[in-house]
Image 1: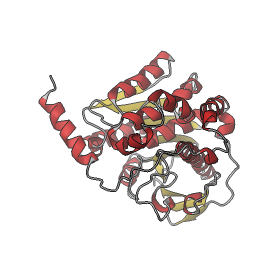
Image 2 (image 1 turned 90 degrees about the vertical axis):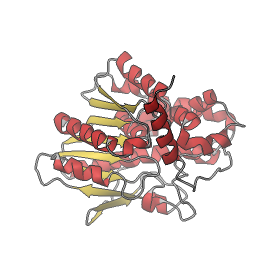
Image 3 (image 1 turned 90 degrees about the horizontal axis):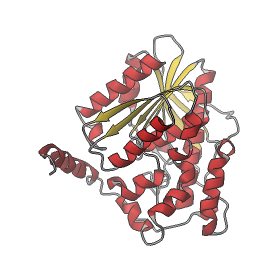
Length: 333
């Protein structure tokens, strides 16, 4: 029997999830042109091969046009898309007044607003850590004018979703380059929800990172889209064309499951955070990720929040979550 607390939490989650009235059910598209493929039958093979050759898949040319205007860093993304707005990367810089060479790259959730995680960056400053908040592909100033949400990052266009996730990972690595150029030698990363996936993929391919906080976790990118409350409108488009198992194979290249082995033996401190009432990153998928770390002997800490996905951003859970993340990063960096 479901407890009264669970019923209350589920009602609160549903209310928060349903407050957005601008979700668009977009047509299903294979998105082959984004990956330079010819046939839909090539997608699974492309994903498998790209994951196997991920050093090449997530490689990039060094950025040569970093610009810091006030506290806003901008540069040309090493990955080009057809949208001019999206091809300039923006990140908000919050230097700590305390010396020490420690900095954290912060990657917010999908559809975060322009203030997303700004408060968290300021909290990191209070813990003696500098912070750089990345705007992922198609977010904030990078959003094409026809959009009201960052739909081009995660959608029923399969190839574009792969392309956008790769772009965000490479943009994150370019941000780490800039942080290193600024003299930071102890680097951490913190990602929430979709940002957590981007952060984990970045961590798996960048050995400069010494600590990582992954706030909401799942092994497979597609499982969240297929089952999550916040992605029902995408599932509606996917359903007639593909199965959940097919989606796992097609989006394998942008899934943490493909890269956990790359964390084995690393001098990396990880914090995995999940919520036992999560309706977007279902607990069964979070537990699968935790077991993936345990089975491989990857050192990590785990925190379970007694709330859901949306409610983790509400008081008192947001304060609890923020303090846990900041304390961990201060201690490990």
